[in-house]
Amino acid sequence: MDLQYMISILPEFLRVIPITMLVVVVSAVFGFLLSVPVAGIRIRKVPVLNLITDLYISFTRSIPILLQLFLFFFGIPVLLQLLGFDVTNISAMTAAIVCLIIYNGAYMSEVIRPAYLAIEKGQHEAAESLGYTRFQKLTKIIIPQMTPIALPGLGNAIIHLIHDSSLVFAIGVVDIMGLATIISSGSFGMQQVEVFLTVAFIYWGISFASEQIIRYLERRKKRVLNRTGYEMKEEAEYNV
Amino acid sequence: MLNLRNLNLSFHGNKVLEDIDLEVKKGEVVTLIGPSGTGKTSLLRCINLLEKPDSGFISLGGLDYDFSSIDKKETLNLRRKTAMVFQQYNLFKNKTAIENVMDAQMVVQKKSKKEAYEKSMEELKRVGLEAKVDAYPNQLSGGQQQRVSIARALAVEPEVILFDEPTSALDPELVGEVLKSIEEVAKSGMTIILVTHEMSFAQDISDKVVFMDKGQVAESGRPEQIFKESDNARTQQFLNKFYAAAQ
Image 1 (spheres, rainbow over the protein chains, first blue to last red):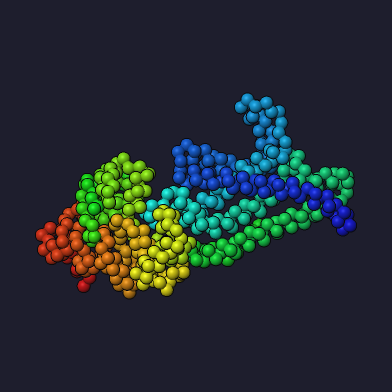
Image 2: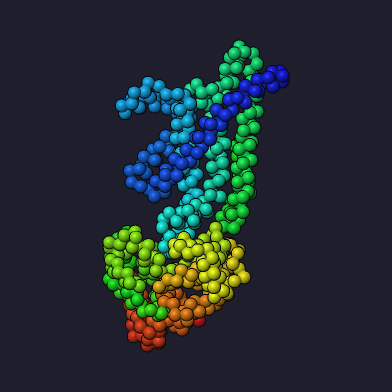
């Protein structure tokens, strides 16, 4: 074990952390935005669209994320050409982000949907009986009660996303993991353990930091939960 | 003031309400009684469109709507002229007692926070809960929650308040305080439609009692007519069963 070597390659890794963070943040934000209408369609069982979202969720759940990355990287240009756009290839980064957005849209919708369904029918009816519009009912009554229920699941989704993002190197994105493979092949496979151990520590650090943020939000939301009387485990468990 | 004509409601092809006519005058207390499953609650829920009737007409405080063609906007208009007190209270769990009473005033009626607060304090005092304004529903007893819910209904100044078995979910020792609040509301001149199994209360408080059976209005009239002088066989059967059970 060459500790000095590990320290010497650390700055290089710090340089690519923003790339991993970019992939994670953009995928999380837009994945969440996508998950809202998907959950809405499934909750309201909108004809036809419901069938499509069922297929979509089944697809993203059943196919390994690595395979999905390849499908998107090679598939998007083909699809765009079929639609008449003159594109021969797209950047690995774009493919990776599109893929993870779509993956998280499905995953997070399955967090939001049960949170919505956990709210008693009486809460809806009380608001409706007072003449709230659907939008007013959702924003003032339903979503504030859903948030603390959905938070642990969304936190888990983000931790998973951080881990999944380490696979984007496979289609050529130079993120933390991508850099690790480059360095390790550059040193002719000599100090593999040191390289990957460094990477492991970096992921640990990122996950730990994210977990702290989520725990903080959760503590705030737990107060809301105590008041509303919905049950939640003392501490949500994350698989970091 | 409130007028229902030829109201029909069915669930999945099963007729629940058949050809209901109901007239409620301003300031009247009308009580719906009858065996379980005869559509009393459903009828109440038709008035604010929590159930959508298949057909029929409603007039309420100057609005005239045909249930078979009622749209979103008309539904909202109708709901904003009514308020409901639910069996399970249904207070907004994420809001304190006073926020529960204030919210609809600000969100739906667009009142200022100050106005809504003052009105809410007034109504909470009326139901005797001024000491509990900052408590969350979870921290209140069933009786207290139901009284907050009555204050919430009063605060929007509806044309009519619909009480859906307001004491059925309560522990027996809490029933009295809620009935007292309802009585208070009735005395203030508010128009009330009440579904209840509290027969003696119904007899005392009502201006009109409607006995429903199998989705139809079997009989209606002044309380003493229904409770004492009814010659309707089904009414008698129901009341006899009820009194036998009470003893």
